[in-house]
Length: 369
Image 1: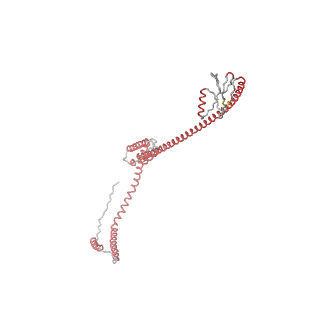
Image 2: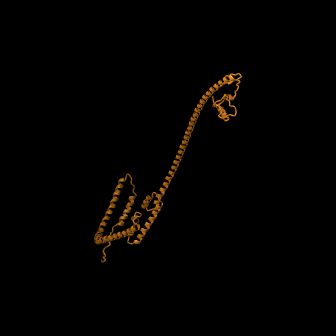
Image 3: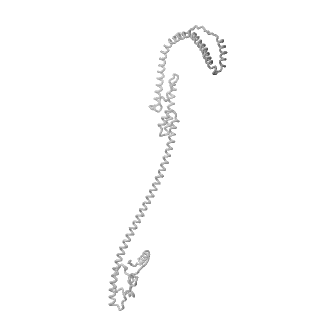
């Protein structure tokens, strides 16, 4: 295309007017107005002065607009024609520029897809670890950005992400998912670690409080068990004492019953033997009257004695009377003559028991009357 050159023939325009004269006159007059004071007496005149000054200023500005309008007539005609020429040029520019943009967009899309394919290759189906939009940079689509630098960016981002995720996973925290979510949002490992650290502090406080509660509960339970054990032991001891007392009462009752039965039997036996003795003695007296050359002394009873006392009792030969066995006689062959003696023992129950014990140790048969 041949180079076109715009050739303009322009005559310098000059606008002149009585600027200095008007300036000098206005300056002098305005000094007078600036020194005026507004009072109640001259308020109406000052308002008229303001209207007069505004009228003068408007007249000057109207003249300016008139001069500018006349001065711009040739420029505006030139501007109109220049814009018409520009429009002729802009039409092919727009057509070509549209194609250039479409080509650039196509190249950028191809470059972006190439970067995305490499990203998928590196991720190996684990795109959730590092999303493409997180690592993508608009500068990758620039013409001067090499694909090597794009790969380096992806490799570095993935390596950093894996290292951060490994650091989070190494904590083995119960809030790992929450920490990862915060990390993906802020892209800062420190934010994720803060989530884990705050949780650990809170968890530690909860566990310590729970341990204190468990210890207190265990101590309370232990005290309660000890109290119940003491109460159970006291109950068992009380029941044991009651059983022992009941058994003792029963044993004592049985002893008393047996003793009562024995006393009744002994009393019965004593009565029987007394009757038997009486009969023998009666028979003996009859015999003695028949054969004894000695006078028989009758029994004399003393007041207050539970047993009859025989005055000047003269024993008769043992071989002349066949003795019968009784509960008062020793059941083995005696080495000396066995006689029956009646005693009246006065004393306490304990003393009676001691007497009975001594008689038993001596082998003396006795019976309570």
